Length: 423
Image 1 (spheres, rainbow, N blue to C red):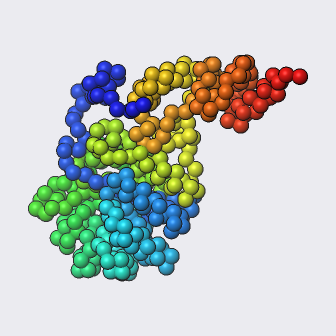
Image 2: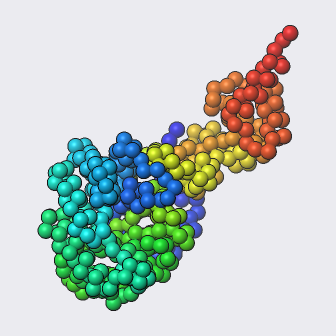
Image 3: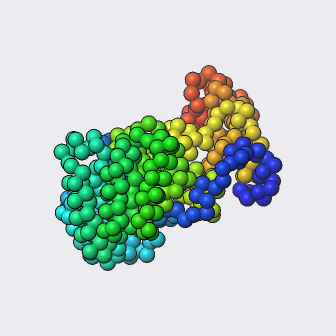
């Protein structure tokens, strides 16, 4: 069986209203990158566990395999364990010649940047410095910072990193609530002192798509006025539930790199979900032939390593994303499978093809199931269909208030076998 089907035939099977008068490709043939923050911003979530180094290494490799451009591997200035983990991850990139580019976060303090320089020197590879400071009026009040204090600290940190030969991304925290006059001064200074990227942060999930558009357009104008070749990053949080859509719009509006965390882990309710960003870009045709079949393995590893359970109804990666016990739904999927047509089976009752992202369609047995559900369950598990067993399973299912587990179905089969045995 094959999931391949000529696009002309696919178009005949699915009329796509999403493409009617579509404004065009999201990135309009520009180069763009995806950046992962799971191992830094993600593990700042108050309910997750900081993974052990073995788990971090596996996560790093999986991120590399699915084509993520860069990864924040941690805050080496946070302590000895953090420093050692960051160094080990950077050496892994070097030793295995991974394509993913390591980055490290640090406050706009030389004391935070020095450990990043030490990591880079000991690992023998460039490590991008992502140095951050709050820029909004509300942060200034809380921290007792003046605009001059923010500007002076930013310049000092950038100068130190640039002098050490490292690429620098200047990160303004709470950019989406910051005044344009201060942002102009900060961005111009960062560009003048050698920053190669400006990162716009929706630190508290305040922005709407209009805000994303306005801020990126403003930043682009500042960059163009400088005449420098500086890129724009977008870093969004999900406090209003707009993390995913804002990230997609950020690419459309001109961001060169967008950030996210696997499963959306992160401060408070989390960051933009990296997995869903990738899935939607893939379905929108923006990732070409990039292979995301190991995305499910990545999400499972992050969930286990951080002890962050995946909600059962989480899109694509949740336990119920491709499960059905409804007779009509299951029958359609089963008929498609019987035709030997994986393409059809993976789409007839699913807006997302499970196989593209390392999942598969699952058919369960429950109170709304029909005989086809039971027959499929038996066939896929190599269980012989003895006389009366289908009716016996359906009888139990119809009286149940939930979908039967495999153990419950096998218990019915066992009871039926004993009751049907001669003598």
